[in-house]
Image (cartoon, rainbow, N blue to C red; front, side, top):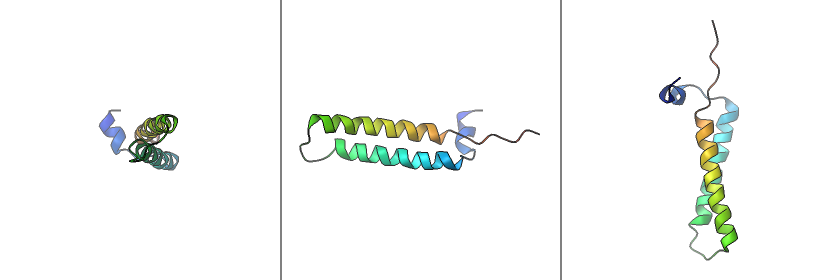
Length: 71
């Protein structure tokens, strides 16, 4: 199955929820990294990890598809 077909195929409800969680994690991580106030380096690096983890979770859950019924 090609990537285009995977993106157009229906996604299971669990992975839809997981995609939303990933997007939220990426948004929180991005907000922490780009915060206009001075934050400790530990918090900024944790924000970077959150952004990367959220992006990976969102991307993986986006291409997960339901198994087609075999005839």
